[in-house]
Amino acid sequence: MTANAIYGYFANRDDLVTTLINNVYTSLADTVDAAWDAAPAQDPAARIQAWACAFRDWALANPEGFRLIYGDPVPGYRPPEGGAAPDAAHRVCTGITALAAAAWPHAEPRYADSDFEWSDFDAGLLGKVRPAFPDLPPAAVALALRIWSHLHGLVSLEIYGHLQAQALSPEKLFREELAQLIRSLSITPQG
Image 1 (cartoon, helix red, strand yellow):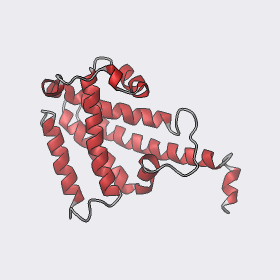
Image 2 (cartoon, helix red, strand yellow):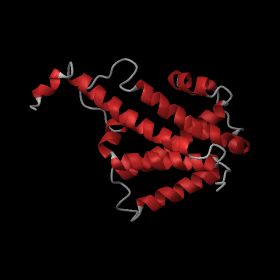
Image 3 (tube, helix red, strand yellow):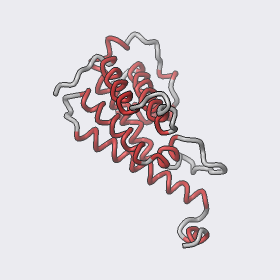
Image 4 (cartoon, rainbow, N blue to C red):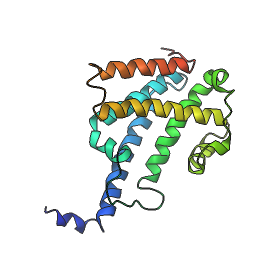
């Protein structure tokens, strides 16, 4: 197939990039959802660990896809209104919030005194998480963002090659940081 032949399947370059992003993001959402569902529902530490490890494993197996979703924008690309992969983005966003929701009964005493208000968050984010988790307070949504920042930051450093020069085992660092994150939520694995 020639380079131009691909446009027989797509209206233009933006349509092609949108399809790629949607397929890659959906693959990520499927992976983390399956890991979450496979972990025991009564064990929030196991569920968080499963989701986080699936996220990292997927990123390592699909570094180009990770960069396409979370890296620098494709030059000149204009996504459709609502984003390139709104369903997958919604699933990952609510998945991250589910991590905080699972931990919240244990973590609330530690984080409940934060002064977050609903007005501190983007309306688009709230439109995703409040219907899915109507009982979560603003402090729990902030906790979800902290969890996401921690996991995404560590995986991004590894994907972009910024850990390998400092840590001979990025996997060990990730697992230790994940264990520390789980402990900071006042939960322990049940198994």
